[in-house]
Length: 320
Image (cartoon, rainbow, N blue to C red; front, side):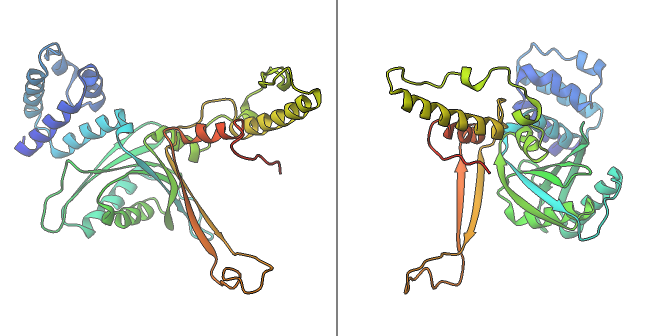
């Protein structure tokens, strides 16, 4: 086993918490059950790591084997990355093709390797038709940096892919081209969604989260729920407040449901509009270009924060 591979495996194992080590090694599925039984996991971690490295040397672990271990670790610790969402689309009149995993892998790797002399690509298939892709980038003159890879999670036969944020933004167009061609799509765009919680992003784009008006039947009438009214108020004010609060609560419930929301941390909204005014001589009224603005939202739990605004009286709710 190459020294660089041994060092790569060693660094990855050192990152794994001891209480997760056995689980991750079994998921890696490189070392056999009999080999793992020879390891005393109650020793100091340094001794455990040395024993595991010897076992990997006996099996002549390759760079790809080491990369697969890193993928497994990342799958267990998805929240350590920030994930962006990309949406692909077919061209006009194009039909949906049957997905061939082997063909996808070959095409994806070939596109990257043609553009870059030094790049390593590893794949790991998981449940739900998901394929995890790990790309270690190099340049024409430097070897791939195995410690600053990009991860992509692509769900076959869907237009969505999720990419870990990276400082190597110059490679994003090439990565998008490889995804588009390999999955037989026509174009790709980055969506205005970002989160550390990959499952939440998946729930949003695949519409997997439960909403009240779709799946939930509340057994508690609105009038029986606590509306926080002051019993000393005028009865007419109480009635008006009660009706308004019931309306806000109903609209909020129909929009978000009673369940916990997917955990989204970043979102942005693009607005483009033309200014209209009856005043002559207005600078903005004479402007031919539309006004453009970008509103960015961020919160540890953005959707839950938005859900709480209307009941708190922080925003208006309208029915259409």
